[in-house]
Length: 148
Image (tube, helix red, strand yellow):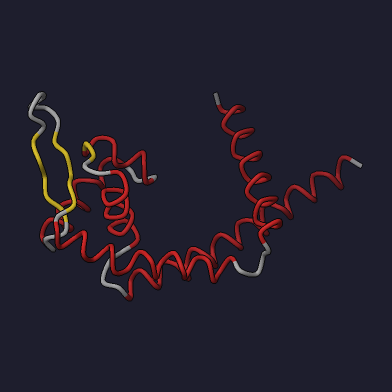
């Protein structure tokens, strides 16, 4: 019985990994077609929805290594989509803020991005989506608890 449970866990992992891979690839391809890479899009979307963010905190919010943040913000800054803003109360802190041009770009592409994701997820009805969300959260929280 234990062997069967192990095999089911392995199968779940493989199916989950493959589903994530194809959905992620499809979403990323759409982002590339809009002139950004997924990381640039993630930073731009974060700044649009959450406002200016300290550079040091962006990585953890979009699951990016902190060393890559400077590079990504540099690229977005060169495109005129993001600007660096010094913190008025702490000289050690620099914020990234979306520019008007960046706002215009994300306002144009984010609704289409959301529709694209909705289309990819439309294979599930609302009840199935709620079940998937609940089960995936359960896995994520359990794994997080095990690692602490």
